[in-house]
Length: 372
Length: 222
Ligand SMILES: Nc1ncnc2c1ncn2[C@@H]1O[C@H](COP(=O)(O)OP(=O)(O)O)[C@@H](O)[C@H]1O
Ligand SMILES: [Mg+2]
Image (spheres, each protein chain N blue to C red):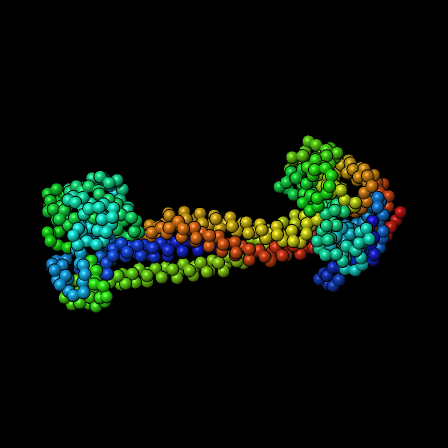
């Protein structure tokens, strides 16, 4: 029970922190500009990956590009899909990119694909099934899978990257090819990802964007990360408090169980004393049994919490509104080791006194009582 | 040889002190078969436990082969219990999770004697007590008399000089009681010192020396 709580806490925190870091790294943006009126939804796209379609009503890209201090400004177009027939169980986020200016997946494309994204090709997030070469159909338009990204734990895992031009074509054709049209006009964009020049102050650039383009809402990376952190820290605090409480409560509890076990076995232990067992032998027997039980309990706890976490991961991520990426095997192993260590430590500490009591009992007394 | 010098045991109870054993003073020579009879509550078990190193006397000294056992450190006293004393308790005293053979092997944990391998000796002991068929039976699968015989076999496993038995026939029928006492006799014939404690005066015919315990006071009557 103790191990389980400890482990869940550290997994959850580790998982979320992992996701944000990987996500920000992957994004590689200093500032994310979204339409003022879609700010809330935009953040949900970024962090929890609920697919949506939205766009600026006016042209913002050229105005953003004119602001000093900006090194690269790369437009993106977000189109949410309807439940897709073939490939995937959930709604997906189509993301139109400009292969010439993109820096979010471009570096990935260069290293893995060795060429820019071609016409009617797509790059899929980690969570999307199907090998390279699979044909995916959205709004009546067919795309060929050209590659797959590493897991991010963010919305990106359920995203599909396509070329902006193909997205406009798809939108236009959706009027007669698809059940419901996309509703995006040629030239519209949903977001601008900005990289500031080296040495430039992100916050100052963001302020400048706010002044120059009133319809835009710029997020700096720290802004996004902070939101996640504050949501997380609340969760962390709750879990830490729970863990502490469980640990505190469990010490007397384990002591009680050890005592009960020791009492139940008083007669057997007294018998062993009569046969010539030393106090040290009795102490070691009771103590090491408790350690063994604690270690087994710890292992069971880890197994159970691992199972629960994998079962409830979607729920946890959903209610906490934080992305979750399973920590690396090493982190898990480390956490597990710490958890077992703690379990054994707590078990050992709690059984010291019962073990001492069993070793110093009067054997005749113990036998007599059990005869009553 | 066991020598008790004015050993007493006092217990605290609600009202005050209770004298369970009052200055018992006697010597038991090697090879004696001694019976202590007395009513329930007269202090027999307490006396036996003080002699066997299971409970410390409030006063007096106990010597086994001229060594004062209650002056020893725990590991030395434990060694005496392992090597020189065999206990048979009123209750079964067998570990329910172990087979007859495993139960008999238990004392080897605390004292490795030279001679036959432990397992051979355990099996021989059980066979000589007509338990050859029950080697791998669990205590719950044995009759009362069989359980008692396994317990006696176990008490002999380390070939002790002294056998201390507390009401060994307490819950047995007359025939089985006879059988167990005959067993003690034959063990005694091999030169072992035997001290049996019982509330049953009918056992007097088996012993060489008989003591009576009355309200904590011990008197030799033969
Ligand atoms: N731990 C104890 N605390 C208080 N009284 C005890 C304790 N052990 C034994 N007695 C009392 O000492 C007396 C002798 O007990 P015991 O030696 O078991 O007698 P017996 O074996 O002859 O039945 C009894 O009255 C018993 O209640
Ligand atoms: Mg008694």
